[in-house]
Length: 272
Image (cartoon, rainbow, N blue to C red; front, side, top):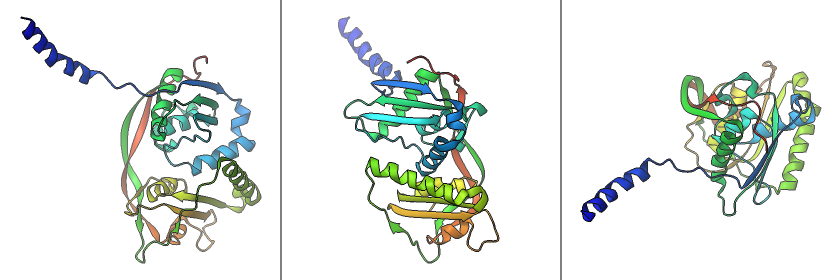
């Protein structure tokens, strides 16, 4: 009888274990603080946030200090996008997800891999904002990024900057943006020290104003600068011209992109 019971348990227990959902990794300690609307609605912090948003590849969660994550003035839509490795334009939810920023500081367990940070941020948003989402997809008009007929003309990636120099670099770009004043001059510039073709395609969404998928087949990392002008009379000022200078091209086509649909979320996080 004992043999039969043990045999049955041996058969049942693995199935039970297989049905148990895996536990997501979590930050050791985390604080979430809303920042004032005027801090995120305009001015220096707003400009800095927009610059950094354009520079970050989808899913990138910066960890400048070993063992610690600091996210300053991030809107909830950007937090969700980063947690699930998509662009903010791929998040579907209430309009108020944009417009209000949060400061997050979290301690990361020793030995944490960078790819685990996304799951940790998911856990934090689920716990503090009662976030519930599901993944979907949508098909529409977009572009495929492909290699041009004469081959790519891409510069090799530049070495990474240390955190101090990276902050100074971001400040310099912010000053350049002030001096060019895009609404008046019409110039939009993006300069990235190191990017893959797939990351470049994701960044080009900002310029093409439509989804862009990578079909270059390129596997290296490159230093890229993109400049476009709102004034279409300026020769060579479109995103198509800018991409062509890199030896690449944008071809119109129907594309399917992953989306993250917000089913439930609270406006105010639970107390620290």
